[in-house]
Length: 121
Length: 107
Image (cartoon, rainbow over all chains, first blue to last red; front, side, top):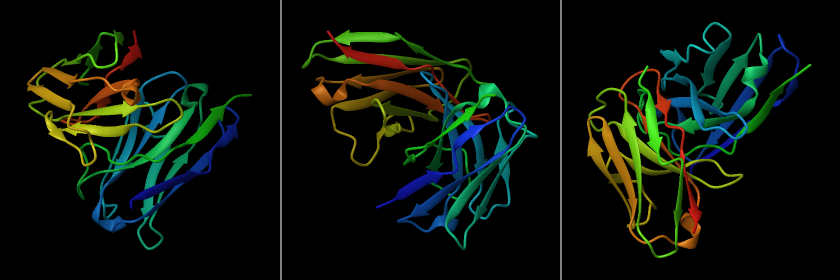
């Protein structure tokens, strides 16, 4: 069974940083692209960033480009999201999701339960 | 950016009735469309991909149709567990985008 477990969320001040992790199990991690998606309270999902299976390519939403960095450690079956220069509008539940193929740009299945990031002074 | 517009925002349906949800893309996405179901406190669950292919574990009462810019998700006979929010998602082009959602509530 595929399992995705996020951690690292919490309260951060505007301008601060957080690093999210997503521990994956139940599949050959390096064979699949992975994605971070976020949902602000009461809102729909927003795609944040995608990384290829080997980590050789990455994509970012304009809203986070230059501030967030996606990465992965295939030896640890773990996906990361380094979030810098945080803003109030980054407040959301952040979930990792598995892509069906090694190259990204597809549907997501499954999604993790997510970790809450709150940016507030 | 491809904008996805879902309608209606809320759909009130009685159990056992048929429900049809709509999703429109601002430009052609051929059939690169997925549908997800989300219940309170849970992560979204994939129902449909490729506009009409049912995901593993997705009940047969869920069906997707459409291509280009107009898509629909039909629930043939609503069960109590189907009352939730449904999102469409285009993966034709970056940035990947989602619709605003349709809430299916009990009438």
